[in-house]
Image (cartoon, rainbow, N blue to C red; front, side):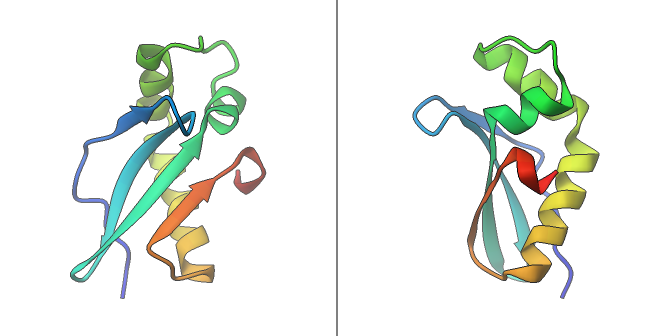
Length: 87
């Protein structure tokens, strides 16, 4: 099966210091968290606030989803934390 990103929503989690988003494979929901460091690597001038980090996620969403799909295809788990090294 293929991973789909049908839900465009994303949220910033200050405790995990990451942006969360969701993919789906059939009826299964897969949770992804992109670490702040990964977002800052893709958008070096991003600030540490929620709005800036969500904007960095939005600006790089296609790339992030591609990486998420690749990571998921190697480890089919319901939760993945994407670090800078994944990119």
